[in-house]
Image (tube, rainbow, N blue to C red; front, side, top):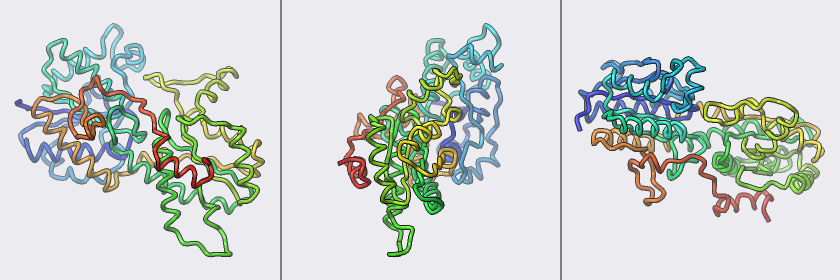
Length: 400
């Protein structure tokens, strides 16, 4: 396939892979197809609808490797669903009566784009699928190749999404400092609220990495803090059924014998109860363009703290969120290796005219290839029956 012009956009929430993925794509095109023009749409699908783009000049190509050490997205993100016409009109992205898919397709045609790379989660790539379907049905010759990013690691059928491993390491690092607050008060209840709307992978994996770091730390016998003070005493994820009364009794015993108790709480754990309480009180529960509850506005950790603190007799409660800290980091070496391989495969597929989302396909022995858009789906749950997770819960006394 002859590819003359390529466009890149990043969308959704940020993750520790966006800027580096852009850098890797630019490097790969420079290596294997140096005559290909590249542009980047600013702020995701918003920039596409508005025709707002940045040319990747020869000067940028020469220093593209610098992007591998940056967090966030150097071209900006936004949450735009091209099939949500009302929302696009309300935000001034299209005019009344216009079809966002048609506007996007027309802009891609105007810009002479042969290949569109979308870097994002399930929402971004299902939106890309909608666009690819529209283009195919209307005879627009365009290859769409997505790269899967999400710190939740919850996209079917992808084994490991870009940015998730770094986010887990940074979440664990965040709590290494927060755990020292146990020395500030007796019967201290620390709730570490971790990102994860429907999937507990990030909460579980960051807890595992934190406990491993604790095993590598040296303590002084007879002089605090003791290892138990900094340990984790509960991990709550959306996939688990939480018996609040039973857990309160267990954590009360921890506080009776330990200086404090530390809980890793996925923000999606108990979300239905939080929303129900808010709606019963007549409070507005705001949602984004995809219909998701705006978790950053309802504070699940604070809600849980109010319910739980009284039940366990905590003298002081501290709620700390690690989400923005972890998702804004630059990728670690483990992630960078996956990002490089994914970007290289994405470019190779694009040059062959093969559309799809590049990922480690769980249904095909974790082969890295272009997965058809119609197989991409969000909401993959974390498997709470994994041996390492069950063993971890046993080690902290949460599972007998």
